[in-house]
Image (cartoon, rainbow, N blue to C red; front, side, top):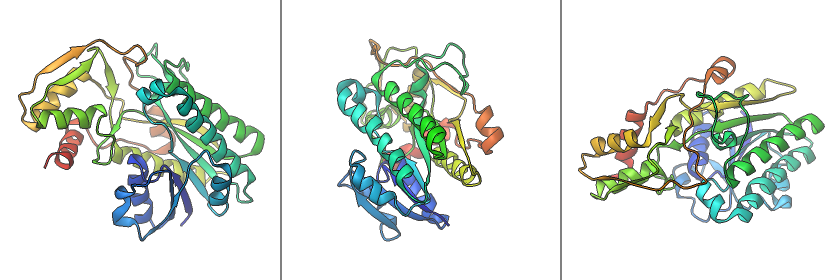
Amino acid sequence: MQRILITGGAGFIGSHLAKELVKEGHEVICYDYRTDWAALNDIKDDIQSVQGDVRDLEKVRRTVLSVDGIIHLAAVSRVIWGYENPRECVDINVDGTANILEASRMSVIKPWVIFGSSREVYGEPAVLPCTEDAPKVVHNVYGATKISCEMLCEQYHKNYGINVGILRFSNVYGSQFDQLDRVIPKFILRAARGQYLMIQGGNQLFDFTHVDDTVKGIMLMMEKIGQSSSYFDDFHILTQVPTSLQDLAKMVLEVVGSGSAIKFSEARQYDVEKFYGSIEKSAKLLGYKPEVGLLDGVKRTAKLLVK
């Protein structure tokens, strides 16, 4: 059993992770700025809840004092939010991550840190599937904050001995606690209402990952980092299966049983058009293997969203 801090613990991925950690017998602290902790209602008596902002170094430091490990998920978590509010994106993502690392450095325990990063650090990869050593050529502010955080993680490991694992996620979905205007829940809800599905661009190709597989990858990273006296590495936690937005839209219409139209608009200039990543490294070194196919995942998600 370990004492684990999850930043962003009341959010989409964080709440699913907290439930799994509790199930495995860990002591869990969820740290989140939210006032709505509904995603954790069924385990609220089994966790410690701390309402706070990752930009508050002193509060972060006090919370980190007694933990064995930190899973840092708190962030401005969408490309469009970073585009619309770049200063806030930098403040929360970069300054918040610096505070997490600094709090670990200041702690006597020096807890390990797992950082939730993103496929956005690669921008538009020249070669697909993209591997972890591909060039990082970011395409937007959100991606710039994530690669900055990764660089901070590496330097805190090299200079201060903090053990760090970086996990890059891709289009995570699969819960009623997701942001409902992300593409999969938005498509499902609009299809169920008979509304058209809008695709901005039309040539997008992405790697969609169910939250259960994402949580499994984090748990495997925990196991790996906990066994090491000195550790730094980065991994993809995704499926390596590309799906176009057009095929996704058709899949959703079939699952929901909707006759909604599919429409197209101009692509947003700050969006990446194509990405899917290799899982060869995470399979070999972590034992990671995704289990939830997209069709199954869309069906599961539709059952949660469409009553």
